[in-house]
Length: 420
Ligand SMILES: *Cc1c(COP(=O)(O)O)cnc(C)c1O
Ligand SMILES: [Zn+2]
Image (cartoon, rainbow, N blue to C red; front, side, top):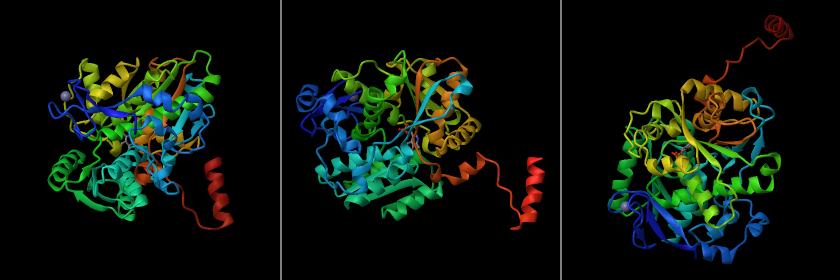
């Protein structure tokens, strides 16, 4: 917290003091980057000390976060992050890729990447003594906020589209948040939440609006860096690391980019990894702007089964474009069919992803086929959410199971028929 010195607008570059603004730039609505004093951080901690930390959560990066130690150490709130990086037993070989890893964010307390953002926003909410935290969500951001808030006794209100997958709505309700479903899409919930927060004085967590979400999400970059420095690099002869990220609002990819930039500014990152953003073809406003060669985000009428990345107007589009431009990455779009295939492929190495979670893998497949990545690159694909969150989509990715009479005779008959 001692290193948090203010905000900088990503559009007009104007700086603000920590208590001067709360959300986006008052002049142009640009997303604000949190500014940290890197020399203070370097006096507080070394990279070696971080590698040796015994804290098994994103709070191991406390000196590089704009909040203080939040307490609640033995609750789920203190357990976001520290997700595993899994080997994929030859999964990439089919596409000529030898080194393919999956960082499994479904292992977070509420089973998605969003816990990282919600944990840091809840920590901030407690510091500013917010009574109520509110968010708009396609489901996961809300579940994460509801779960983190429940663990620390913070009041939370969630606005979600009534069409959100039932498992996500169940999470919101079970965590005891006040849940309001809107008869509209995510974008309409988003706008309503901002209006309500300003009218009622609630603290608003909205993605691509509250600067602290990206600060939480950047901890995934810190973990990737730590993994790379302590394990991954050993398997790489050329030290090329490529990270694949599913993109909706563009806040995860912006946050990850911020994390790598923090590490670079601290002198702890040898080489910037390439970041590749993957969008559903039916919800590709950021990829569209990237391919037009500018930063002008034109809204789409989003239509994809990957509900977590179904966004008409991405709220962090500008920084999301820079994340790949400044890292020599690119955008890739994939069809829903490719996303369903990706769910099945990841399942075969023991990883159960929701559609948006598997989208990054679908992008990897396309990148390998199109020569965007090279056979000796080390590839790290993020699975951002658990398949249990959307069982209906999962069932579309696989063959239905047969039903037989519970007898040996029926079983033998069935096996003869299917196995020849
Ligand atoms: C929110 C989310 C994303 C995309 O994050 P953005 O910040 O909106 O780009 C991807 N996958 C899952 C599972 C998510 O919940
Ligand atoms: Zn501005």
